[in-house]
Image 1 (tube, rainbow, N blue to C red):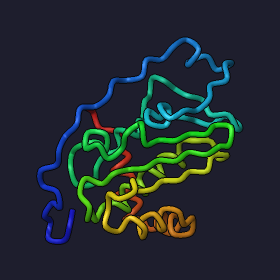
Image 2 (image 1 turned 180 degrees about the vertical axis):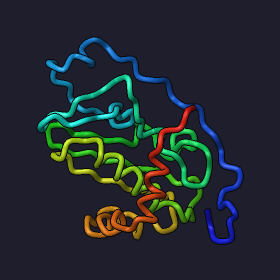
Image 3 (image 1 turned 90 degrees about the vertical axis):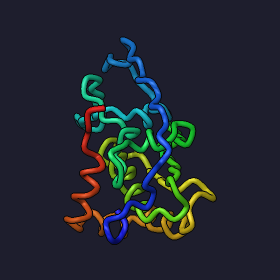
Image 4 (image 1 turned 30 degrees about the vertical axis):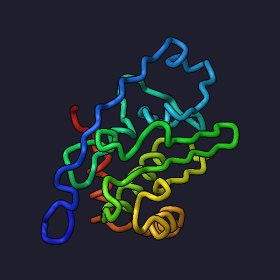
Length: 178
């Protein structure tokens, strides 16, 4: 919320959630190499690490698209802040890029939203991935400053050492029933 307890965007447009990804037998087979793609990042499943290979547990979905908005009782997908078309994955080069679109051009929560996306990916993906989270070009008044903060590993690490900020990020990442 903004200063004074008022919502910056008191009446956001709400979008319909996309359907759940249907899992096939090969998706659940741990012996089949499954490349990480944009839909998997958008629908990131709960991962636990066993050595250097993550294990996907289809029965415990923790979706990046269902990260909670810090101001509203809605997901980032429902606010159209994250979209699958804005997720770029290159599994061969171990890189993931996510662009997000704040609901208003002067959103003071943009850095917190970007940090929440980045933390979710850092916690879910194997360490080999380089993660780049940015504001969709031309959608925010402070786009350059926010992108600079999100790209700076030291600033991200310092932010995550702040217990109050980490608590807010964890609230954004807490799964809600939909």
